[in-house]
Length: 344
Image (cartoon, rainbow, N blue to C red; front, side):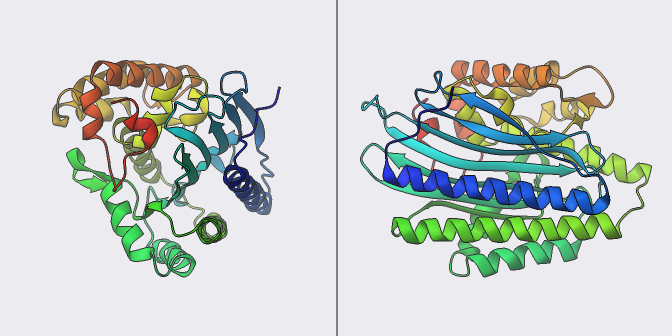
């Protein structure tokens, strides 16, 4: 069974755009892998929203290979063409995270989405951030330069929003070394879609180049390097599960794509390190962190299995249904997604 597509012309165009970026990224990453001799290939998984009546999505995923720890390139489109009372009309999105196996190669997160509301207004959300376990200034500068070239008029504003969104207050640091977050941007649809395509294509090509060079030039990996990667992966999971509004939004709205929504999580984290941060958490988020730690296998390092992901997803749903006021403690740029707003 295939998902029913949205009827909106703008949603159709946005969906086609993000699908093309999904294929571009997968092709680029597979080419990087082939150059190392690994020849990793993405597999395809699909999910349906309400048996396809309200859309669904396709994700390309891989992991546990010589090149990739975890990788997910998720495209989705949900809509409510048959429920005119809902504020959200449709949302078409690309959301991807790539975690390389080599700790000297940075991870990357990209999210591009078009949200259309029932009153016919709509806006794009453009995000791109570089997430190294071991930072290299040349990689950071290269990533920033690509985003400046893609969005010269918007870059400074988007970088400031991104720095705000990806700050982790209780740890006094950021997730990632450079951030781009343009929320609620709209001039006219064609111009905005062109900007989304340019940002997406430029970021994908830039990252594939950074990854290729890192894998070729940084081949020596020590135990300390692996420890730095585990610490970074732990921070990444912590930020996603306790602060990220997009993740929370998707999990609160439905439970039909938990594996896809949490496809960004790395393969292993330091469970003890996570638990050590509980005293820093404001209530009731300390209880949320306890539930997340309990959902992970008691091992060192702790594998982030599918069962652990599903348990974390359910822990988040229980927490925010019991404490809806805690949504105010999550990260924010300027605009709260309507899917989150609907659950207040």
